[in-house]
Image 1 (cartoon, rainbow, N blue to C red):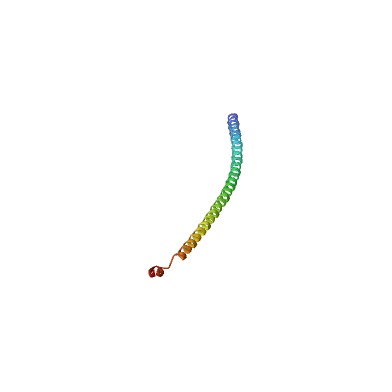
Image 2: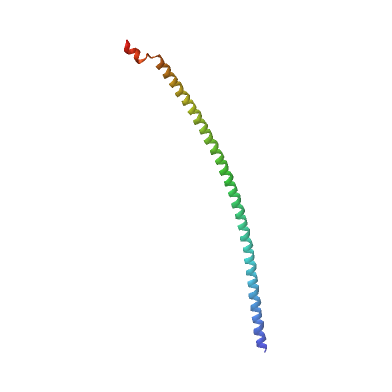
Length: 110
């Protein structure tokens, strides 16, 4: 009977040791899970910040591009108006020169 008690005590001691080991592992794993959760939250926040920053940069670049394109459009419109005015002036000059020329019938009579 004494031997059975000894074996029982040994088994209980082994189970207690195993329990303590598992408890320690559980605490380590719980700490690791908590650390990983914090890391994930930090990474998610960093990602959101970077995304917002990139979005803001994109909006600024888009605005600048729109301004530059509008400036080019305005310059091209002004250049078009200048060429149209030059063409009208040339047409007027040609009409004036044509008006000064004698008529084709008058040349034949002479």
